[in-house]
Image 1: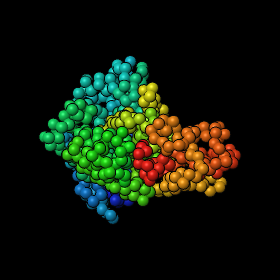
Image 2: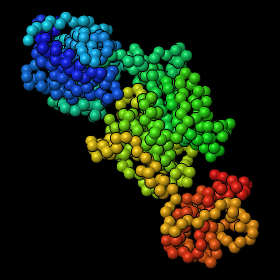
Image 3: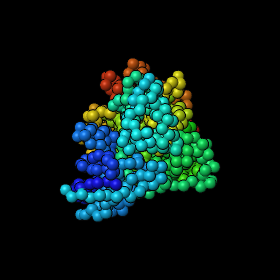
Image 4: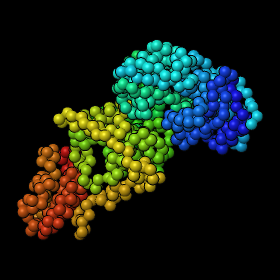
Length: 142
Length: 484
């Protein structure tokens, strides 16, 4: 389970709509706790892929991730997952997503349209890498 | 040496919950092998089925990416720290790109590519990547011949070929993609037939055109990789700039006499051709193969290196010829290598590029203005037919041949005197300035230079250039004079 506030979800949706028709992405920072992950902050990251491929792939460069990790550590947080958008496509992980993921992290995917973000789901990879399972999102106010 | 490996949070469950693990190893690869042999559950998240590090997994030794050092062979020392960091990639599925969307191989193809398939560096996955890949070859000459033939044989799924020439006798000494039966045919057709014969499982796309600033971007757009097999500077700069602007890797090769060069220019990963050569050489300084000659086997060697690097790019191999210029000299049989560095001031791939679209490359290389050396007075010319008529009439003229002695041995116009271009000024006194002098070479360029040099040196007599050189003589006057 992943716990996140309504306002942070709103930020993720807004980031996705802003970057439409390209994919957006970012880190989910927070803590691993006894009741799953708690997101306390999002860390938007620019889509590092070249212009032509932005529509189909997003990539967080390791240096960006290191920067995010460093930021998290300074604030006594951890990277608990990532979010990205699927412009005009279902908020479901692709085969490509599966091959480029690790278990435990939450992968939040939001479907974006030109002026709107619709479905938003969170996914966690099965420890044997075979598939993604949908993860319950507990939305708290704030 | 004891070194510490930091385990990222999501993988700690596969490492007994530990965030740091210490192992004794000499290299980064050894450290990871030790780690994953103790904690076997970790392995599949770091390595793929071919035992290669997954492409989104980055390993940092202290603060340096080991890919920028010696990869798994990077040595480690006491107290070093290894950090495992994922780069995050993902996104909606698009066709023919990765994983399960790669094209399948038929049983026939599996049999054909079996020598590839049994090597883990290629394997099923790599062969399917080759099938999914597309490569555009500029030119089907000396370099294009082995490039095309090896890429076709290797199973590159779609090969585009650009050429506008026809097959000539003098091509066959090195352009092994064409045969004697193809003389007079369009090169793209002859090349297409040869490639189809090598591998009927691939697609060949022919573009009968001269590559220009108008069509380059459109052509390049449809391919993953561009292989430069051109023989002139304007096209070479054009290929480079169009590759930089469209983000494609440019697999470069060039040849002259016994010497070849090869590199991979890929602006997002390293230097481009302009970082190496910001400006073209002055026109005429570097002779073409038509003027200077080339050992037939040389493009075979250099082109095979280009094919090799192209295949490695497709397979995602490391240690490409990026930021490396390979020099080969066939006569002493030596390879040398230079390090290249991306130039931050490069006009096309630097930090503040000034070239944002394709330019006029003929003009940039000064070809149009310098096709013939500029002379202060107008260059006087005579055609081969006219010269012959004057000789038959018994006009008092002398003919000076400024080619090299070995060319003189191949073919000559009867009754001429040989003074190679390099000696023409020092041996000026051998030319009678009282008599009208016709100067000739193979095609008319060197003889024009000779006339210019003689005039500058103060030669008083009348100098006339034979238009089209001995080649025109052979075409228009005496076909018994061999063309070369």
